[in-house]
Image (cartoon, rainbow, N blue to C red; front, side, top):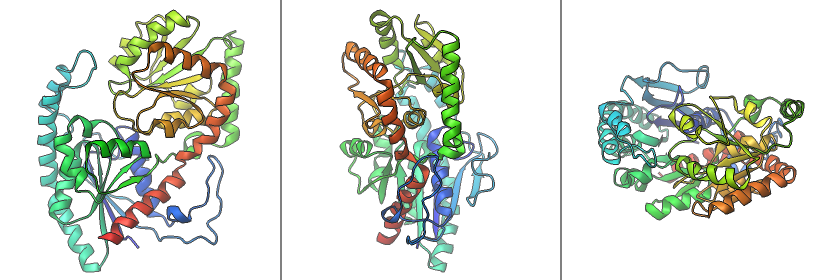
Length: 422
């Protein structure tokens, strides 16, 4: 029914992170024929099928994307896909954003609010200026053909994209992926409140958005992860885990509690970890915290005596030997993809209870308030470690909540609804 979807955003490919990977996966998915969410079968990670036989199937839609090429040429994320991409050379960073990072808050590590806002205002005006005539041509073609056209946007350049969509009367949805809308509500208010729908991974995050913005509709669209493409089949995952744990046994390390933190950042608990790690060392000195990622945030955490810092590491090489995964968000409960990737390997999670995090963790771990006493966080880590086999089984079963086939069907239903109502 929907013929055309056009994504306008800062960058899609090469991806800056999980948000870009997720949207690219969703766009590619709806280019192929498939079911709406209400007709979709139950999917199991690493298991092909079930068959779509006897299920109503939507024909594939056309997908377009407009973004900057500033991060470089496209990758295999979109190469060979049906997405038609048009790029500009608008730079992502500039003098203002550089100054915002140099003058960042020393306690949280977040960029200077005022300078970041000025940078965003400038880039969004420039982006709107570039995409408006291109979208206008696309709108005229769609109208002439009698085809519905629905816009999609997310993250830093969403205000500029949404302004162009509104000017051209193109209904659109906006994804909320992180804290940028909450840091700059005045800049994003019209973008979110004028959207036909706001898409979030998790009902809890939708509720967080509703507390701040008067949105028209919230669509739950889980993160889409193609587990088979990323990790292989179930036997491969099981073998990786067995080898990782065997290596620990050979090193006489199997009884050392090992906790993983992946890509810490100012929003992903950096200040919290600086408080928690010393308390963990005091109350549970035998526990080791393995920290994965690069840059100054990881280096800063390396000063703690119970920290082992690693560079960027394939996620399979993290969860093949880890006992417990730890994830903390400071203010915005956007879905933690790594939680369910760990669950695939039978690794449970201790996580903050913000937004979508309880939905991501499910029965495969424990959620706590960000403001809970550090003693409670240590106790939760010890409990999950002590029951790691039980929690790990639950985490593995729950991992399918972000199976890409399910997520694509839910995205297809959201766009279908927007097109029907406009």
